[in-house]
Amino acid sequence: MGPTEPDRGHEWQSEFEEALRLERHNSIEPVPDHYRDAKPLDQTWIWAGANIAPINWVLGALGIVLGLGFWDTVLALALGNLVGMALFGLFVLMGQRTGTTQMVMSRSAFGRRGAYLPAFFQLVIPTGWIAINTWIILELSATLFEKVGIPGTDVTKVILVLVIMAIQVGLATLGFYAIRTFEKWTVPLTLIVLVSMSIAAWTRSGIDWNFAGEAHGAARWTAISQIMTAIGIGWGIGWLPYSADYSRFVPRSTSRRRLFLAASLGQFVPVMWLGVLGASIATTGTGADPAVIIVQTFGSLAIPVLLLVIHGPIATNILNVYSMSVAALALDVKVPRHILSVAVGVVATAFTIVLVFAGDIATNVDSWLAGVVAWVSPWAAIMFVHYFVIRRQNLDVAALYQPARESRVGDVNWAAVGSLIVGLVVTWMFLYGLVGPLQGPIARALNGVDLSWAAGLLVTGTLYYTLCRLGLATPRVAASEREAPAVPAIEDTATDVVVR
Image 1 (cartoon, rainbow, N blue to C red):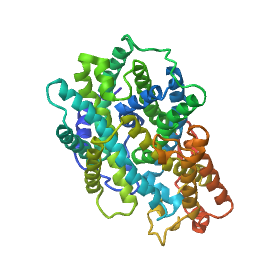
Image 2 (image 1 turned 135 degrees about the vertical axis):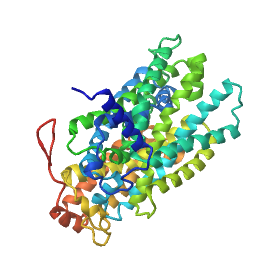
Image 3 (image 1 turned 90 degrees about the vertical axis):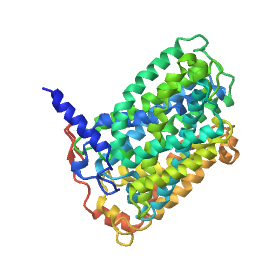
Image 4 (image 1 turned 90 degrees about the horizontal axis):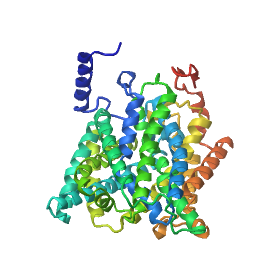
């Protein structure tokens, strides 16, 4: 028998009470077992909510804007996301197993203070995500106000920035439980609206399902590679530094298979869906501007659609703010997490106001996303090799919190830091963004084909593995950590195998 209505009502009441107060585990210490009550479905709602956002319409439409045909764009989206989200699912499992954040786990590979480097990137980079996502909300909301007679002036937009940021930062400041509850109760409603939007868009006249595009030969492959980087493999890779921050609240007894599928599909389905929606609408000649897409596609339905679609970017930004705050704690900043969340909000608000006066939307989005992949790809390669190959999923979790001079993981692992630096350079050499400084020499020589994510993963991962096998990693990492107590084995309840 399932729970009775009174039992369910009490459960919901307890959940909302938990969501409306400051997170009990308000730190980056390993989450205690009695606080780890998140379910796989919670991960689905969290990651689906983070990706049901207008930015994915823009990136889907970007393929058409760059000259690709509709089916070329769909194929690039599907293949890229299958690979990117599979990697994402594996990183989610790291958080469940260790109970720690992604940047704290980086200490095992980079050293106690060597991990400051990736943590710094994770502190700074999401500021751009918050600003871009809020800017898209801003443009859509300004369009809505204009339809009811309120001018969408710069003053109106700045006021909107302040209001929207207050909502986003407020939820992130409360912490994981508030984020989980917000996503759980709002994402299903948003999905219903987006289904209605899709039906309205796909049954209208003007969509060219056989749109061929203008790019041919080398130009076609250039555009495909850029889509793979922006909203294909690169999109999934871009979320890797966030993954464990939320899966650390999942009990270790939960089936790893179920968690992997729940998190991966939570990302894959909305990214693929909205990417296809944006690409199909773009075949009508609306371009990449989300405000134009909505007004021209949905007409009189634009107002109710706009009111609900703003949920997506808010759901994305609460993850950005939260993960930035725990990244700051991984830098040994001695400030409470909730205070850091407020500080993050102030900085992101200032950056968003700057972005209000920025130029072409497609250029801004693509150039920023390309910059994100430039650091995440080599970092992810090091973490993947270290966790799954070198350490075989056994980390000395206690050593991650020891003082730098005493920690069994060592102070700085120069093999990891050096590999990351080399990986950044190699990634840039294969990168072809829409901004000159982000167009590397090899990408230029290949007529703009962007293989940055592949170069970053393969070169960095191979280099780090080789240095470790040659004994060139920090000695205290190579020796002492191997002798340290590992995370104890657990039984996987779905597969009946011992996870080591």
